[in-house]
Image (cartoon, rainbow, N blue to C red; front, top):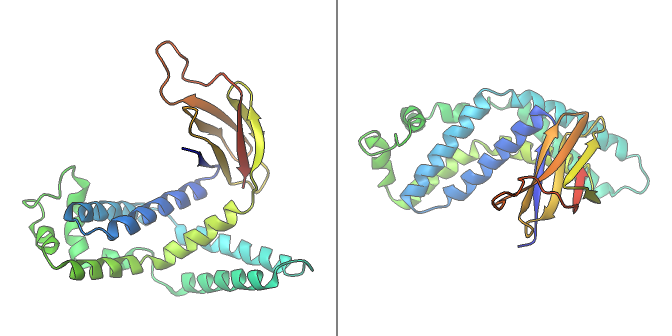
Length: 250
């Protein structure tokens, strides 16, 4: 099966970014479906995303991050061996996003005002609440021509474009801070000290050995423990062998 990358945020801000990134990724997949049942899943994920972004101050966090990225890029532009073309493109992207964040509406506000979405959203909070007897208006919509439905879905997703771009750029900068290095977890355990700017720990390890990593810690220190996915009867859940893996502190 090969290797997998597990990501563990050390700060609440990054935890929120990763959750938004995952939901946006799931939305893009289900948005392409032609099957009505998967389009129902699209609505579930959309409302889950709206619930998340409405209780977070993502705009403030993203703006602060973009300010920091701009300062770093300007600093690196003075380095004689820097790839000036790539740096200028990155700086242009950051400045464009900063300007849009200043002028654009609150994330999700357009969707909140949509008549169909506002009419059906509350029912999706109920387990199984999207049946035809609960939401006949939604099931009428699901019977419309596929092209019409996909056009509306595309329009809904476009309103999240700025959020998608800002999250993608911020996480890209965070992930690029750290390079993977080979380390060993003695008896399945590894402990590290986080530097000031570390916000994310990335673990790349084999998934062929039947184990996976878990992390506990904070912005100062962290501990990794490898666990058996399906321990045999009488076997400890924690791996007791030494494991070689790759780690990036970002």
